[in-house]
Image 1 (cartoon, helix red, strand yellow):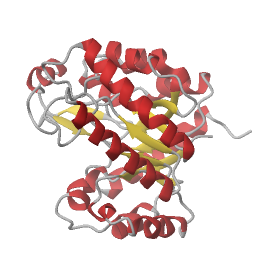
Image 2 (cartoon, rainbow, N blue to C red):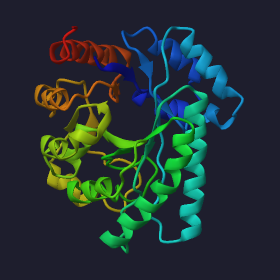
Image 3 (cartoon, helix red, strand yellow):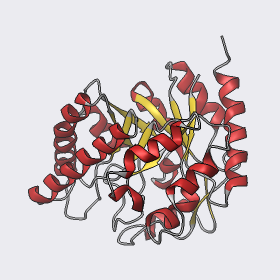
Length: 296
């Protein structure tokens, strides 16, 4: 049966920018939920101090939980080789961070969809950088997970491999026992595509999942696509919502994951309106997991 983790989507500003929330405070909130683990973020302000890493691991494990996944955002599509090398070094540090926290999965991305970048160049740069990182990850028993991402909070351009065609080409270029896909159904809508169509194309490679739900506060997906280029951060018309109340068909998603034998971590990236909303998302997913992965 898949295990459930949560991510502090509602508290990113507080944990990563202004420091108004401490990581220990987030842990105390999260462990009250009916979950198995906490997905981590490399950009927590307190993660700059390496001495904090084992402390946070112990705090989580003291509550009988674990830290299975690391969320980070390498930018491997820059045309400057020295820039890409620095991103590789960042990724290796994030792999070390994951290892220190007792995790097994560390995210990778392609990078930004820069206007001057051709499809061939972007695939080449991203694939080569991930390839370089894979032996380092394998030595630490860490699987690198490529997410069908939309856009990092602090990027100017959207994800290079946002579209299904590009994402699948990048996935197909990488074959390694410590590489897999982190599937996020909501991000597919932002590419103007069908999340189930993407899932069926990569389901055999999916090793982890982000559970989320999205809705547009106004306008359409087409409006969103027109405004996304060149704007730092997420589009204003886009919102995370309570799981089970948005656009995603979790019955169809879980049916496909069950079909291919998926039995791993699902991390909730919702709860932007607070802990009560996150708790409702946990309850919804626990029920669905039991429905599609009944106990033997």
